[in-house]
Length: 157
Length: 435
Image 1 (cartoon, rainbow over the protein chains, first blue to last red):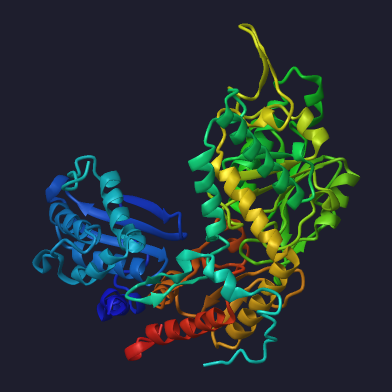
Image 2 (tube, helix red, strand yellow):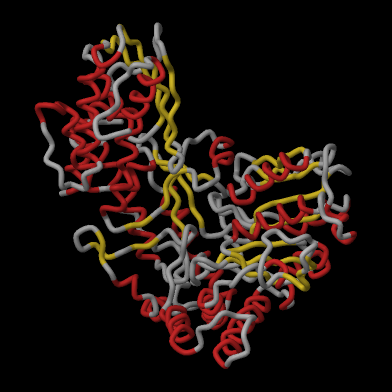
């Protein structure tokens, strides 16, 4: 059933017990993103070491209000970007974005996406894609603000 | 499963809902793998009966032309159809023909008033002076406004230097009519007739009296009242009122502004161009009498015809009957939802001065997620802040679920909503994932 395929156990687990939640210091940039259609909000801080694609994501801290999809997506983002380089994190984000915006026609690459592959079911519900992207795009925005040499996201301008 | 047997089943006594439903082709479709559609989102937009669709098609197939220009046969027929729609719509709300202006939607109608009034600051028409507002003056809105009757006034205040003041909302979802809010400085009081979130019907006569006592103009957002109950704008005594076609069985792309004749005759135009002029010279132009003054450019025509047909349809049902039917559904929804542990109604919990929008929260289930489960059962509801963000803040909630009812809804559908809410609770509590 579609509903269960969207709300996979892993999503509900992250929703119930979010990873890395809370705003922490130090950080180089903080952004606040809102989904104006539903009022979901997220504040994201990033702490980077270095610059450009090789910069290391030392921390992503966040505070958020929203539905299970947006909350869980941000929690998964924390797991997948912290400890990686910005280049690697953006590679995951690009694959993730392609998957959730793919209307179910994009084959998800589990090797790249890891737990984020659980959000594949969201692609069947265009109205929820923004929820799945809220925290991730805030992360991307925060990196861009923290580092003027931040790489472009693949397939984005 | 709760039974709604205790609700008086007057459905059918006032409206023949099965017969009505047969007029709405969309209601027979299924969604999400064969679930019958249960459409509980008429507060956002209503569905349209064949009679409205047929009227539009008939007009377009027989009489389509640009109205109020040209002298050929089709042009005359089109103009007659357009003006006939205006007459019927005006009569429907107790207004005179010349007091009804067609706009793109209710939002544009409210902006028309706000921009017309601020244009008075630069108008050289002495009649426009009465609308001049500036620093030291105040505009009053309410915390339960839809953004459409709020943001235009924030912008109006920014343009004119006036100050925005607010009537608050009480915990039980009523307006707190603090008498100190309206003062000698108040020039405009803009308020809703019926909250699109809470369902609350506001005491229009009382607010009009408060405004009149200080010579302030009243601007009523009637989007949620005109489609659902008898409304007589002259009896209410408001200066302006706005509503939209698509929430009352009519087409989208058409809204209505009612303005007292004397005021429309003095209000400067908002949009300018063709149709709205009297004389155009190279150095300056003069403007047509209302309503033409506020209908620049070739207007929407089949939409006006369709809205006329929607008004005919509602008149045939009888607005008292429409209101009674919605009361039955609302009572059932309030009772059914309140019987579910963890559900909190946002707004009045009884039928007193209340319409058929029922908003609620479910403990531990975000509205977006609840809506997804309801949708999976074929039930369409609205979630989010419903374009009433300040109201949600006032209630300390980030968003809510809203069911809204209309002539084609049934008690079985209300029961399905209540069952769907329980299903959402069960779904998110599954496998020990207690949220």
